[in-house]
Length: 314
Length: 225
Image 1 (cartoon, rainbow over the protein chains, first blue to last red):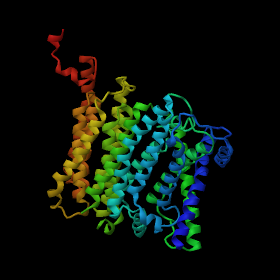
Image 2 (tube, each protein chain N blue to C red; image 1 turned 90 degrees about the vertical axis):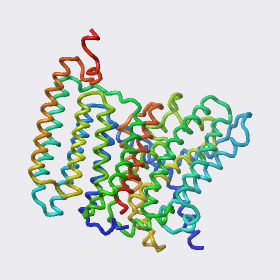
Image 3 (cartoon, one colour; image 1 turned 30 degrees about the vertical axis):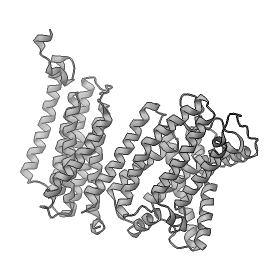
Image 4 (cartoon, chains in turn green, blue; image 1 turned 180 degrees about the vertical axis):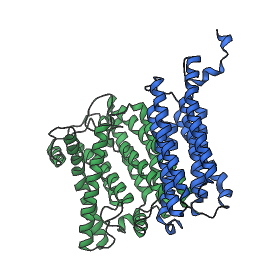
C-alpha cells in the first residue's frame, strides 16, 4: 500500500502547490511590468477568504449549478493524480493513461460549460460557447502532440513514457521539439492565459473562463478558481516532466524524493517565468484569431508526428 | 528503434532537418515581408549549420567552402539585397493577404506526407544513415513551389523560389554528402545572378504596372485601356 500513500501525498502536494504557481506567475508578471504586485502566496489568502464567505445562489439555479464546483474540482484533482509530479510507477498512473487525462479535462469542461449556461445569464452562455469552441480546436492538437510522444516510446502511459525517456537521457528527438511547442500553445489556450484569454480581466467582450464562473460565490467560487489553478499546474508538470524528465524519482527513497522535489520546483518556477514573459510581451488576440493560433498548434503537432515517422523510424 | 545508435552529429543533422522543414512552414504562413526575409535568412543559417556539421562529421572538407558560400549568399547577401529592395520599393509595411491560410497549411502537411511516400523507394538506394532527409528536402522543395503558387506578390514568390533551392541544397548535403565542387559553385553563381536579376525585374514590373502584384500581368494592357 506504500504506493497509494505516496500517490495521495503527491496529489495533495499538487493541489497545495497550484495556487503558488498561479501567484508566482502573477508576481513575476507584475515585476516585469514595474508594478508592486501581490506576493506569490496571495492566492492562498484569496481562497481562504472565499471559503469563509457565504454562498449566494440564484433561485433559478438547478442541481447542476450546485454540484459542478465539487465535480470539477474532484475530476481535476483526479487528473492531477495521473500526472507524475515526483515519482513514476505509482498505482494511480497504472490505472489511467494520457488519453484518460484528456478525457478528464473534457469531463470537467463539459460541466463547466453546463454550469455557465445553467442560470441563463447572457455572459454565462457566451463564455460557455467560447470555451467549447476553443477546446474543440485545442483537443485534437493536444492529442496529436501526445501521440507523437506515445509513438516514440510505444506507450500512452505517462509513467512508462518518462521511464523510457530516462533510459536514454541524452537522446535528441527532432519530433519532440514540435510536440513540445504544440503542447505549450495548447496549454496556453486551455488554461485561459494571454493571448487566448486574460485571467486578470472581467471585461465583458473578451472574457471566456471568467464569464462562465461569474455567477459563483463563496466556497463554490473558491473551488472553481482552485480547479483552474490546478489545471495550470497539471499542464506545467506535464510539459516539464515529459520534455525535461531529469530528476523524477525512479525509486521511493527519501533522497530521490528530495531531488525530485527540488528539480520539479525549479522547473515549474522557470516555466512560470517563461509564461510571465510571454504574457507580458504578447497582447491578447481577437477571439476570431484564436482558431489560427490553435491551427498553428495543430500544424506543429502534425509536424512532430510527421518528423517522427520520416526521420526517427527506419 | 535504431535512432539511439546514431552518433550525436547525425542526430543533430536530423534535428536540423526537422527545423528546416519547420522554417518552410513558417515561410508559407508569414505575411509580413520583412519577417519573411528574416525567416528565409534563418533557413539559410540552418542549412549552413547542416553543411558544417556534415563537413566535419564526414571529413569532406570541400563542403566547408560550400558552407561558406551558403553563409555568405543565403544568410547575408540575398536577404540583405531583398531587404534593400523592399525598402527602396517602399513596400516594407505591406501585408500580403493569403487566401484561406489554414487550407494552405493543411496542403503543406499533405505535401510532406506525399514526399515521404515518394522518397520511400529512393532512400533504399542510399547507405547513409541520414538518408531519411531526402523526404524532408523534397517536402521543402514542394512547399516552396506551393508558396509560389499561392502568393501574388513578386517578392514572396522569389523567396519561395529561393527556399526551393535551399531544399535542393539540403538534399545534396545531408543525403549524399554534397555535389561536386564545380556544380556547387555553378549553383551558387546562378542564385547570385538570379537574385540580382530579380531585383531589376521588380523595378521594371513596378514601373510598368504600378504594383508588384503579378496577377496584373495576366491582363492585356490594350484591352483594359
